[in-house]
Length: 235
Image (cartoon, rainbow, N blue to C red; front, side, top):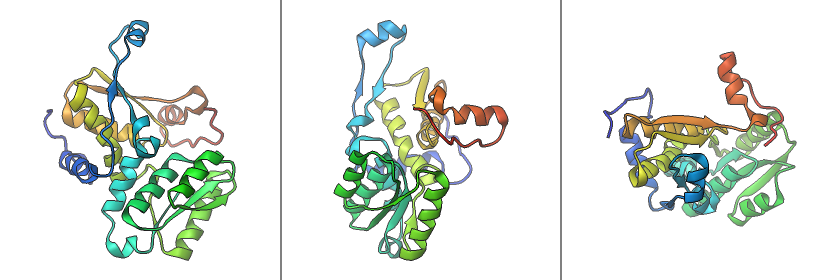
């Protein structure tokens, strides 16, 4: 293990370890898989952390349930809310069902029907809105004001980041150390959590964020030195 690196706020090594212990009963420790053909094609030894086998099918279950497990009883009684086009919506709905609380999910009207069905299947209450970020945020504010539910951000939250970081922690423990960890950027929660786990657990591993050319807002933001939101991602 590398020397403990204390990041400002709650993003510490001890917090990552505590998060992993906290969510263990609610998530799968997903397998790490390899493929000789892909190794030969890439000219490198690759290991895949298969979060597609996670509950609800994605890593976002980790951050969602970690956040809910730390909310006080009085907040849980009023429910939780978020905006999402699919995966975090399912993660929060399932986490809420596990803990016996209500989940109010704002989803764009053009979200895939299969994802809407999954959210409803997990007991989430869907409120549809126009497919723009502004509409999602405005509708969410209305829902929170009406219900008193607690907003759980899909990615820009310390507890969500710590939860997502447990995937990389498991990967390093099960198959590491690595020269590089490659994580999709998306909203940034998984990539940030992956970078934290790598810094805490190894000294050599570098974290690389990957994103499609048609949705390269992180790259554009880094080049510009300011946040540039993606308005019409082509993924």
